[in-house]
Length: 440
Image: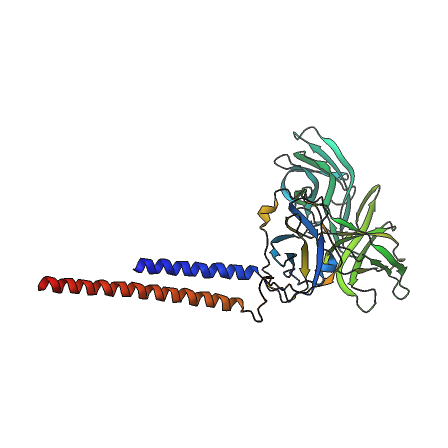
């Protein structure tokens, strides 16, 4: 009897759990405020698709994008995965072995590096504690440590204290897989650099390239009050999160600090500071080294203001600004003939949205078609009703339904136990009657 009761109890608990999962899947969508229709042409086949998430969508979402939902036309929530896009930062340097350093006074310092194995690299990062220098560097490569081939003859490394502190110790070279790298640092009559080590810079990991934004320059003028150069640009209504700005500047030699502000409108009262970055261009003989890119932490604002101080010289001349962005996208399993909608705009939504595990996205993801979205609309939650039956005036909550099922299950168990008890009593009574007949 105990085994029978335990089996019935397991069945009842399983029914309750299944109902709970089903109730969670039918999420209450009444708190969402905005949506866009996901547009797919007739040639899009069943399978994985990408839906780009523009900044105009993300700036109305939770900070963790936890209120994004994809639903079909009947309100069924569709699992999906958010891919945040390519990071514009490079790969981490790989430690290498410096096996020989030879100094020739009044000329140069020779430095030999062993990668320990052949792999592709795009540069070398020198480690030194020397300060306040600018040195020209020649780069050669070798497969055996004896025969060498010229890679680059006009690289620069620098460490500057004034007017701003700048340390740029990377030596960029054309992509190659030489095992041995020979650097010749041209010291001339200056003290040689103290070499503490080196590492090799691998090429960027393969991924989708950053997306270039069509930034429209609205203003490009010197500020009469400060002498700074101010550039204001419009990234457009359809844009993606900004991750890098690169300036085109005419000045020959400079080191300056750049400030970037962002705003949702072009009003001067709405600017907020986004980031700061140092840009520079250095010359030594025929060698030039520059850093004109400013990294930005995925800014969603439409308008960008760049301020470049004059630094005690004439105002900087900026001829162009290149804006790069990542393209986040929602990836889901598309079924032909279904209409899908992208919901957002619910700050109180649970971040645990239905999602597809990332491991399942490897199949055919590279060729997944990119679908567009229509105009933003006000969202009204669906009301599900069986057309063959009148709609109920009041609906029980999910917990109420679960509690009802548990009551029914417990009632069934109680009834079943009473039946078993009655059968046991009947058997006991028959046994007493049989024993009394035998006695007489």
